[in-house]
Length: 440
Image (cartoon, rainbow, N blue to C red; front, side, top):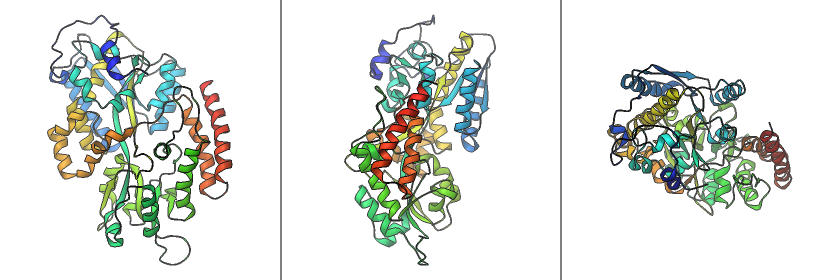
């Protein structure tokens, strides 16, 4: 995969677009309007709800006020899985929307099938594209997640970081420092687990994880010196010494009953908010729910995931792609909307209103988000960890393979299967699942 700078500077123009404008100034300072005088209608499928959807709606309304000849139909498709199922069905029916929110590991299939639009020509267009300053304003980690080969097929949108939330007073009362290593983490989980009635089942767990640990296991594999899979060769790394080391560490806390899954609580932050856990691993996108629902008297803070051999930190979230459908006017309108959605002002506003993080570095200096940072210093964490951040691999069928790994890990964590056998079976089942998905 070529580096982002090479892609953006060497992209070949394939659209006949007027060449004017000053590339030294920020593109968002110019009015981003379509050259077409006809009314253009485009559709954007998403999975945002609540405050997230309200923020997108405001940004969209503002865009349409500035571009009265472009109508954007925001279409909520339910949760992420609902959205992705509907996108696949619409692809097979040849009825894809103009734009959609999507994880890159799913977008890989659409890129492979030629269904996603390479937006490089729009990005490099001197009139309606991005300036060099704009391009440098997006963290490389986020932009690389949108690039396949020589083409860029999306722009980063709602990103978040996996973090360690913790009960401040529980740590203070126990005289324990917030852990920064695996060893300290396991020790803290043990010290903070409480079985007050002596029935053998903790009333307060040291740590709670999300139920889908297999899809989020990448940071521990990376910190052990490994990886989930190879994006170039599709080789899986489930049955490796590094994966075993990571699983042994996690399993040690489950077997000691100092860790558990969210289970009936559905989200790992729920027991933390209610004083039934000392720590949880969750996304920064959970922050609004933590702020709204934490019981009175409980103070929660966040820290980077404790490290091991490395200190890699996982960032995740969706991008927005433009599908290669509709007229040229619709494609241009879709680009103008996508550019507007991700400019500094709007990514700062979206991050301020939600638990997501800005996708531009300059958002820290935007008055709206700068004020949020003062009130909620926890949001600074995503910037502090970005130099050691990574995003997951994007293999076609990779999700299916991780599901196969998850099925085996569930057996390990529940004490029904030994790690060596489980990882061997996960490797075989994962390879089969990935192959079937790639051939589907």
